Image (cartoon, rainbow, N blue to C red; front, side, top):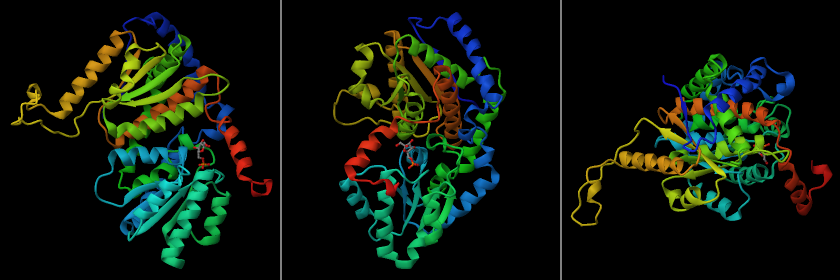
Length: 426
Ligand SMILES: O=P(O)(O)OC[C@H]1O[C@](O)(CO)[C@@H](O)[C@@H]1O
């Protein structure tokens, strides 16, 4: 199988070749530190070797449990927020085909309107849910679970417990609730934070329920792991990516914009945003990660990217293998689009991609291009592992702890006060 590739386009030479080579050499010390299993973040590195939580036994256990739900569910509701739902949602939204249960999402907002609409969608359907939360203190999944639990008990009575799977850390409140009520329980690994948890029960169980080939996804991640751990450091895509982005930050490029022309990648970019924002945005440091869904967003932020302040660099995802075809046929109306007759949407989209990256890099915007051989489970696995690894390297270069998120707690304190949470309910 081919690998993911990284190309850097920089017409104005913001980063000179010798500067890059020298910095890359210098940054190899961070890679070495990671490979030598630095003890610094030992309690957060359960994702680094995927065999710990996504080895063969784990995968077959997940598949067996998922098969029971797949056979019986019309609708499967994933209840979770942030690292607890983003990775599964990214893959399911991109790759799920028509067979298997419909996957819905709850516990990722506190909107009365959203939850009411969701409950309407469950009517007359066979409903199963999976609640995923590391500590089960976050408000969104907490009250999302309560609403759905009441709904399921109202509809199925004592049988409701067979329709509920909880994913939490061993010994957590969620674990106790599962034991007290006879719910199925999966493990949220203690040694993995939410945003790094895709290759564990957290990300893989909902994917398997949706019919995603999780074996292939784990294989992609495993191959990327071996490559990143064994390749020549000068070729290491994660080290190169981390080096480019930190050099660009030093030169005033404070915003990284992930850009793609396949809407299938929308939720993947949301996963990527959480990964880098929570890992690097601390101690008054970090690149601000955002994403754009081109070509649509060329008609909104495209103007700013091209002509606005030069504070943005773009990371394009270029999908190589054509995954669909739609030919524009000649039409009886003279709509002035005949120059596109017999052309495939795929090729028109590619032309838009090439024109955009040319126009942006030509006007001095530094552009990274990640070539993705195909949009399938295998390459999603590779991308997940590559970006997680790169985030660890990049956070180390930046000098921050890539595994905590102390800032998130701030607003929570004020919100809990407003809502009257007492110390006893902690
Ligand atoms: O799995 P939990 O504990 O509900 O946390 C969900 C998410 O909430 C956050 O703490 C942010 O509020 C993320 O870091 C995390 O992924």
